[in-house]
Image 1 (spheres, rainbow, N blue to C red):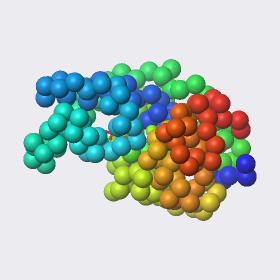
Image 2 (image 1 turned 90 degrees about the vertical axis):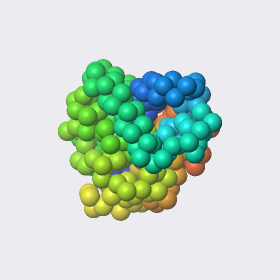
Image 3 (image 1 turned 180 degrees about the vertical axis):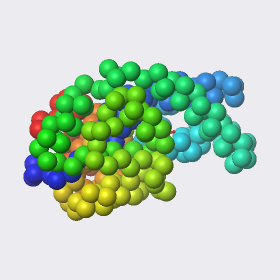
Image 4 (image 1 turned 45 degrees about the vertical axis):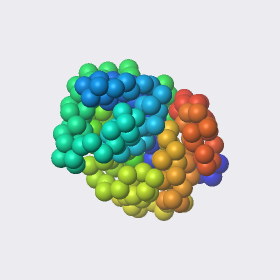
Length: 212
Ligand code: BG6
Ligand code: MG
């Protein structure tokens, strides 16, 4: 692999397994609305924006057009309140194996490091894990307008560090993120099940398996 100047990391599913907390919070909303939301359904929400996740959940419940945008806004807020309740309790040891070491080693070797996440809760998660200072730049759902697979989140990260997209490597666990990296002209590394990561340059089961 060529020597890259910048490594951009997705957060949810790459550095920490927050999917289980997203799942608990969405499932509680579905229960209140009177239908079952399974782990399998939850797979469809990985890497997907909060608003689009709610739309998928309502499709699963057979009520895609039942609510106004204002009502949907309230539901998204309700889900987020529950989710924040869970991630406020995140422990430092919940960082996924090898993540801290890989990012630190890259930094020591002069590679710029960044977070490129859809989540508006990124600052809270980084603070709970105690890793905010491992990153030169953090681009998240608070600083972007367009959700992955739009390349905006990664393009903004590279621009902030003045690194050409072709010199960036992106670690992603969701297809939308792989597509966003490709659209940005960057090299995507698929983290997790290769079937859901089509187009990645290479695949690794987890960050600890990435040889650097
Ligand atoms: C992504 C997650 O990183 O962030 C999605 O994979 C989530 O599941 C999205 O919906 C938005 O996150 P948040 O924390 O802003 O609701
Ligand atoms: Mg992810």
